[in-house]
Image (cartoon, rainbow, N blue to C red):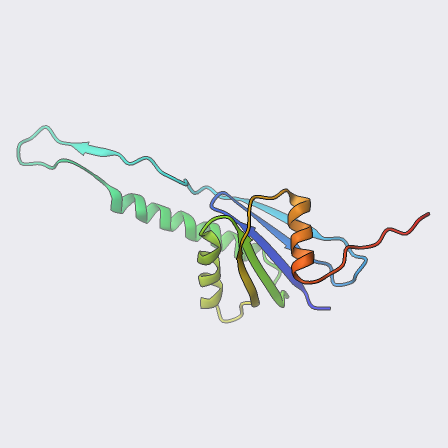
Length: 145
């Protein structure tokens, strides 16, 4: 079997779900928390002099900070991925999944991205079931004792 992984992703959390190579193995998950602010406060600068700026904001600085936080978050996720992954699906409710896809495509040794799919918020068991279904892996059967 191929080494298959799913990443549920939004701007605050990422869950990496690794399917086992053998049917009876256990799914492993890894949770990563982001330090990104979803909607940072915009501050205004008001100068008391006549020739200084009279209002406005430092939007460019805020956007640059968001970009750097986003890059650190994605890099942390990439470092947490198993290098042997053969197939990957990225899913989640926010646009962050497309940023992760773009970053993976820039890399030369990225896994085969099978899909980037919109999905709602889920619990960890729901994420595991979703990834298993996406890769058409049946749930492990419990045998009676």
